[in-house]
Image 1: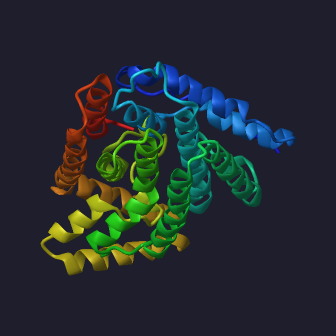
Image 2: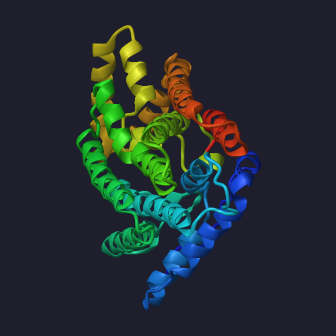
Length: 347
């Protein structure tokens, strides 16, 4: 078995400039992950290296690093190794979830490159994801902080819960809005939260500041996922690395679609039309894909996209309000700019 070809995917120039305050520490995170290549299995080692080489935004570890530096310390010239370990754990945890997501969704592409799932047997891919969960657990153990390890373990539970909730909600076209937000809080916000809360705990911030940074991570995670769900309708395949409408095609109904259904003048007729179209999913996939393209166009032509952005903006604003307890600094300014970048991103 061989791994998929590496396809580097660096952050956008704008995002790279925003992360400049922690560029040196991000390099330490990359080095820590790269040096943790301990398996004796050549195929697994290659898969691990290829996935790391693809890069990505590295947004979650960057947020951990930026949050850790929000309160200046008297003598520290760089962030402690425990914070670097947290950042590596967060990124490895995120990577592991992507490997498993690709198996569950049957995805052939990730960031425009073949997924591990597309070139390895399914069972081997699941085990590779498990290996990365193991790597993440190793990094979090290196922090040596019992409460941070506890938060990390809670995150693992929430990730599984969120994935199961998503599977149960497949092709559920009238799912309640609060169910959607509970699901994405588990699947997405939980990783942002362990990054920001964990950083505060490792830096021995006050209880109030720990609570604020926990909420900051939750809110940014919600906003990030809402925008991700918007881009599945409005984005370009060249930017997304997958066709527009992939979520709906896979049976995942997200906020833009819920809002479109809720705002439709004849909701019952629309639901009946959707259910009729979904009957082609297995017997005539080409017809189903064509109907999906039509639904995507309808969602984009409605107010659902604008309303979804309004929801995302609300979460960003609520998250930024959590930073009011912290002094003005380069790190706080970078986090504020990241909030706006989340809303503007194209992939």
